[in-house]
Length: 295
Image (cartoon, rainbow, N blue to C red; front, side, top):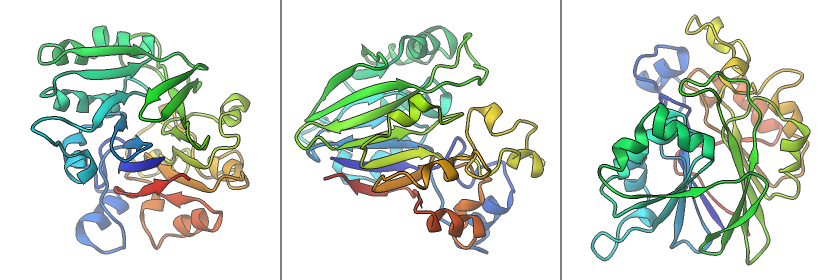
């Protein structure tokens, strides 16, 4: 099974167009080592021919063009088989509109996320004016065949984040299994806490791609950029006694990779003490184009 990080930044990308935080400034002027990143999405395949996109960011066109395995062949035949959503956030769904030229989009989503796309953000109503959408229900806790030698099991990711559309903010993670080898990977780009149920989904997985949005809970307010904490925005910070780094660093997982990293997070600066600490604890920081083979 191959996992390709198409975009490794949180919403807004890195640098973010309207931000002059230390990281964004460094990305623009080259004063410190760091690499620009597009907004979070991955592609997964068991055979390197049939690919499944997990979330469709606003940068999806550029991400597809940057990865030859996703390029069309034989006219307009595409190796993109389907899109699976972790939630209905705009950062994860606006890219669906850029896929409208396709003959149809198989779209895996929970019922709550589907309702948001239909009656909240209205993205599906616009998309369906251009191409058919093949809605495929995602039921947490149920192992389902995906195709191309893969299966998936979605799992609930509890959150108290206030939904911008509708009444609930429904979030899932995905445990992906290569049915030929039995090896598994977990994709979890948004989480507010590592509950026992969420941690149970990580058992025996070979690769973990996980939420690294903020370094500290008050990161945004300390920079004078927002009044909300990381947790209030639905993300567990990396640092702190109950942060993700302390909880994840000891887990016996071969590859543990932070993605969905916010532009304010100092781990994006390759010479920062925060970056060195993360790497010392056996964690990685994703870049666009990172490819991992799970054997």
